[in-house]
Image (cartoon, rainbow, N blue to C red; front, side, top):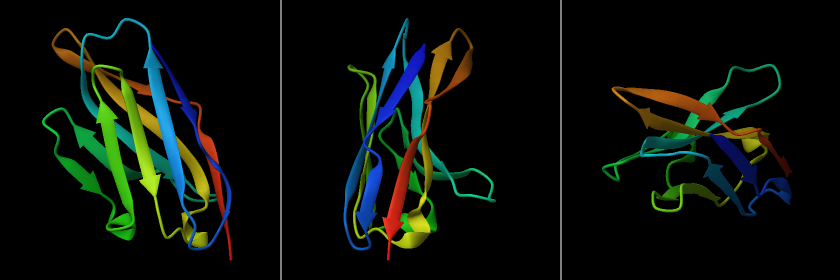
Length: 118
């Protein structure tokens, strides 16, 4: 299974970006789709999660500004980011926990750079 992320770029503060991620390979089901980010000198942190029951979870800093959406039939996940701040600057990684028998296997995309200028 391979994940391919796209949609990053340079945007001014207050602007918007939409990140997308598509998974390819033998996939029988995805339990959780998500986006994480890692800023320079910081640990990777969860940004948004979308579970198979459609429940979502967001880091407090992006609540109300970001929306995660996914399509299990197409194995895709997106992150709409609005009202971007310089503090959102980071490499964003998509993640999918793919069902494999009785366990989930964790897959990561290659990362896409988001830079927000002030």
